[in-house]
Length: 114
Image 1 (cartoon, rainbow, N blue to C red):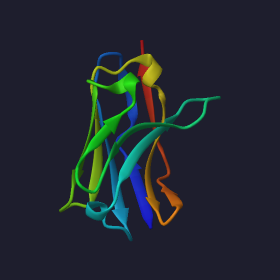
Image 2 (image 1 turned 180 degrees about the vertical axis):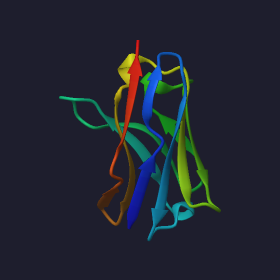
Image 3 (image 1 turned 60 degrees about the vertical axis):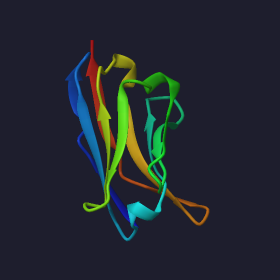
Image 4 (image 1 turned 120 degrees about the vertical axis):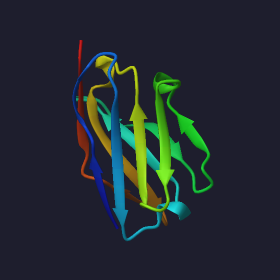
């Protein structure tokens, strides 16, 4: 299983970014996929998750601003991030749990300037 995260960058507060997580060795259509983030000196926290059936959950801090979606044809999961805030600055990772094991992408840096 390999996960390739991309789409991070530097953006001003109020701006938008779209992160992508492309997979090989796993079929996203059959799996729950999550986006996590980790700021310097902090733990890695769940941002959003989409189940195999398309149900979504979000951290309270991003509700109404972020949207997770899945493109089954492209085997890619997206995280659309709008109204970004400086506190959204972190490395973002995609995650797929398979048989009690977690698979992670390499992370993509998101930096939001005030």
